[in-house]
Structures are given as structure tokens and as C-alpha cells.
Length: 338
Ligand code: TYM
Image (cartoon, rainbow, N blue to C red):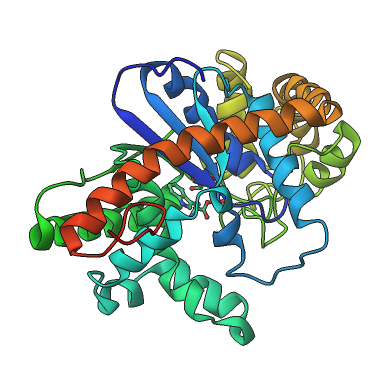
């Protein structure tokens, strides 16, 4: 087992549904990588959460492994951080049940993600989708984590996690910390339609796996500032999603210059997109290569996840034993009755 670093405990998760896109990467995973050195970090592939949306068992295990390879390729160091799969640690579900007993229905009804996902797929509004944030609170608090790097869309879920911690502590005595979200500057990346947030389910994103050719096919038709119908029309770069992506991939002074050219109609949107495509590839290409290397070493990937699960389980067992004891539930972490 690798040495555990000091610092506050950090936890974050990602669903193995769909492809990892730039929103996931820039909005969350980049922060995972930069924060891992100063924290005792756990990163979790939340496969149980993914079941709340339409689910195809075919290939699901492979998607979990693929996602693990992306996380490692992004720079998560398995000797430093714990990378594991949620369903390898059954205590997540046990703690979620205890938390459900203190979580107010009204708070769950207010969750915008529940409302959005219900609207997106009205024939699949299931009870697990409703209680999704309770499992998320359990994910974090099972490790008594305080620092949670996420994108902006998860902030409301984090508020609920804090509320659950407060209510449980009030009833059973202080034990859980109140976790707080940590956001990147790219906390809400928009999709290429320029309207909604980039998301796996909306198909409006660029996946890390996409080749430069595939990325260009999408960028070419991506929405820009609507004022620019012709090349000679001056634009407002601050209203252009392509320009905001330059904010991530094109350093100043080049980005500044692009902004000026857009305002003066000195560059066409297509040329501006070409610069973005190049810089994007320079940033993401190496990640794609490392991902391919991880995928080629299935044995090592399996070992990393196995080791991660063992380290996570050791921590989870301690929390659940304490929770059981305080709640007057029989048995230790493995369920044996004393
Ligand atoms: P998920 O799988 O939807 O997304 C993973 C991470 O990516 C961030 N993200 C974005 N950031 C910026 N712009 C975007 N367009 C964008 N799209 C996604 C998300 O905010 C997230 O940080 N409920 C979580 C998974 C989860 C979790 C947890 C997270 C389960 N348990 C405990 C933190 C802690 C989710 O669905 O993430």
C-alpha cells in the first residue's frame, strides 16, 4: 500500500456514463490532479450512480475500466491517491440508507439535477434518481472528506451533503465534517450549441477520446457570437463560446489578440476555431496517448483498482463501525452481530 499523505481528506467522483468530455476534464479532473499532492485523496468511479439513468449492462464493466484509464491518463497518481470503483465498497450503500433516514424529502425535491434529468427522460423517473444525492453524501462522508473538487453543477448536491452531515451529527453526536466544493476557473463549460452546459447526455460535447478530425468536424459547426453572420461583422468575444474555450487553451497575449481581431472583424470565426483546434489538440493529445497506454496494460489497470478498493474499504469499515455503534445497529462493518 502506498504512503498516505497528510493534508485534508479529499474525495470526488465521476459517473461511467458516456464519454469523458472537456467539461469533466477542465471542470473537475484537472483540479483532482492539481490538488492530489496536498491532500489525502480518493477518486471514485460511481457506477451505482450511473444506474439511475437508462443502463445497458453490455459493455458497462469495460466503460468503468476505460474511465479509470482516462483518470490515470489525466495525471492521477495511484501511488499517491486512491482510485477505486464505488461498487467495490458496499459500505457506500449502507451509509446511504442511514443518511436517507435524516435527509428531508423537501431538500431532495428542490434538487435541480433531479428536475432536469426527470424532464430529459420522463419515462424513467425512478426512486434511485430521486435519492441520488443521498448516495453522493454517503460517498463523501464515508471517508469523512472535507474537500470536494467538482464542477458548478454539483454545488447543490454538496449543500445537501452538508445538510445531511449536520442533521446526522445533531442526532447522533459530532462525527462527520461538512464537505465543501472546490471549483476550477472552468467551473461550467458550455456545450458546442453554446446554450446548455456540456454534458454526456446532451451529446453537445467534445470527448477526450475524439481524434483531431472528429473534433474539427464538431468545432467547424459550433455556435459562435450570433452577431457575426459574415466575416466583416464585428463580434463580441465575451458572448462567444469558442472564445471562452480559448480562455482555457490559448494563453495570452494570443487570446487577447484574438479577442481584439474578433471585435474589429479582423479574423473569421473559422480561422479562430482553427487556432482553438490546434491548441486543444496540444493539450489533450498527450492525455489521449497516455490513455491508450493504460488501456494496453489491462493487468496494471486491474491492480490499481484492486489496490484502490482495498485502501478505500479499510477506511470505510472504520466509519461504518462507528456509525453502527452510534445508531444502535448490531454488528461491525461486516455485519456480524455481537
Ligand atoms: P459527473 O459524472 O456528471 O461529472 C463529473 C465531474 O465533471 C463536472 N462537470 C463539469 N464541469 C464543468 N463544466 C461542465 N460542463 C461539466 N460537466 C460535468 C461535474 O461537476 C463533476 O465534478 N454526481 C456526480 C458524481 C458524484 C460525485 C460524488 C462527485 C457521485 N458522488 C461525490 C463528487 C463527490 C456527477 O454526476 O458527476
